[in-house]
Length: 395
Image (cartoon, rainbow, N blue to C red; front, side, top):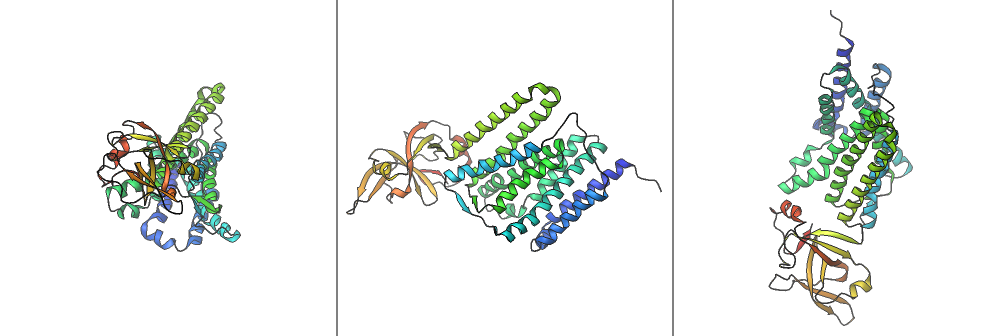
């Protein structure tokens, strides 16, 4: 019997390991193991032991030092900060759904960390095997990353979607962040080994499962951060890796440029979602024509202090909350009851009648200070198929 070459053995080992990643993600197996988290954790520990103690060691040899551990640490911390800071300013923090007692935290770590370690060791081993055995190394790396993405996506969420809008929300909030996260982790593992990827994912998971309060951001903001940050940070990592190969003396400048780009991108996202005193909103209806047209963007100055709300007068355009929507209309009349409590009667400039319900002070979000034509057209195009109440700005 002909003996297998080392390259063929490496390919077989990597294929079997990838199958081991796929098996727990299969719907039937996933349903069974969901009620047995410790058994699943043991499964990942066994795989880690097999890779570490039994299989031959495989590494990708790169030119120069490629220690990306620091990038794994900083990436995890920055990602948490980008999510947590706007949640604090927007008052979108909620109690953790996890048990954060000492035993609960220990249980959370036992059920999460072995999975992260095993999956990233398999990712690295598969990359190394492909690097040694495949002619098209980059294509193999892409296929491996796609497999890891598919094992994380819950396709039940797609089948449960009842409309195009639900599919869009699920894609933005869940699917695309999974894809971009895996691209980033694959880059960290491919160029820096297992440790940077494990550290990056572990920092995020430890925070999510050990901290008493967690961000509960709107789906659009959560999805935007989940998509944008891994893309920008991946560019930063790639630039650092290749600049170190070619321009060793320019590392510091490349690092500073990358950090500045990341900072500006973060500030822009925070501005768009309302972290700062002034924030933008897209107008989706014609209730305020001709001053504000559908597809225009308005800049809104936040007002939440009692004296600021009491100072509002007739003719000013305010942004206020109505159930689960945000509306931009003009104050038609300031109302005051016998006890001195004020409320506002509002009306869209293009509407024939005043709004049926008066606006209470607690509903007021801010005052319009600037109209920017046509900048909000993308938001209008995304929601053109939905029936939008008059004056709605955002869901």
